[in-house]
Length: 331
Image (cartoon, rainbow, N blue to C red; front, side, top):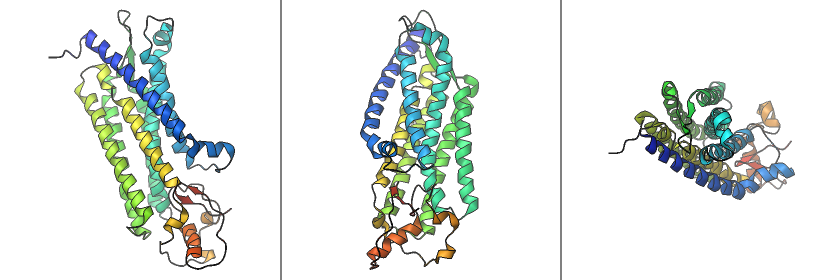
């Protein structure tokens, strides 16, 4: 039977953990390079106009990237090397930074999906601001758990320092995982209810895309949070407690980012079959008369505008730009 608390086992676990982080860093760097042109490059060259809705997308991607770089440096560099001082003096602070960045990346990935539900419920202030508050609570939870929940211990007789979860903070860590699962499930439910409320046809490309992506993301959340929570509960050793955390965070961020870029490719005309009641210009709320700064899913009024051309209106279509599959109203 394995003695998980023996020093040799912990040392071997940290060695394997360092190999996993190196692999994740390489894989995630390759993913960033392949997907950089889809949004980031457009923002840099001015082809895409920056909106606040891009913040969760960018924050999640690069917070996770910074976390992987830092944890790789900490865990993969043996203490006997010239960079020993990094592990001994700056290590605890860097470990807390990694923890905060990783938790914030997971929260940003969830809020990235929550923005869709916000747009669908934007005319219901209770639900709209409720989702905003849930995102804020998620970020605060991530910051608190990230700062308080990790520890680092170094033994001069071993090559690698041991990173683990503080025993008194295990409840907070498990609570964060449970909150993430509950929040992502709530986002899925509100997105489905919002689409039905807006009378999107269930066989439309938009409905199928948002539904399938929501279900897939909740499934990924369960498949990542359950193993991470189980390892925290089992208390095999400090290294095993955090063994799956980098992988779970990275998978969540990739899934969230991929859902964004997938909708980004969809054209407004694909949603032209949506039937909406006629709206006079004076009935359109003021925020909808200008560029939509918060939309991340779909601007129903502008979709109707684009459908006029399909339905026989000879007027030229308004100049629009699609972000996350959203059609912005012309400025």
